[in-house]
Length: 112
Image (tube, rainbow, N blue to C red; front, side, top):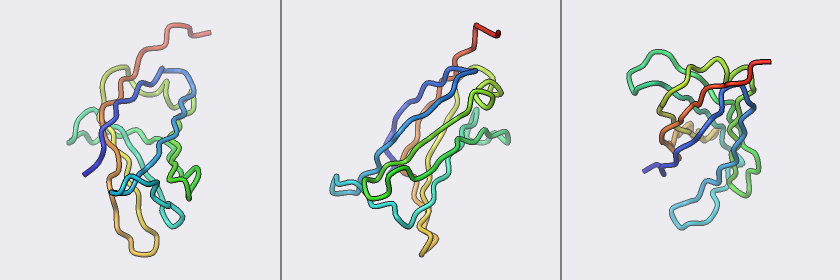
């Protein structure tokens, strides 16, 4: 079962977050042979998705980096979204959802 964590993104700003993935024993999961994907959507059934740039940041420490460039965050309308992070084992093709939650995108005020 995935862990739950809510995120906050400021529209028009660069966003970066480092997340540590732990095994069932609580130790960092070695992500050496994994890829990462993450999207946010307005609802579970929404056909419109916005993708985080997701990557393994420090494989042996179980760290994943989620990023949005300023132009990508400003393209997302303000509001609440659902997101998740999935890792895929490149050897077995097994997918695991490791994190999910709500993303709140706050509007940009300064537009200069």
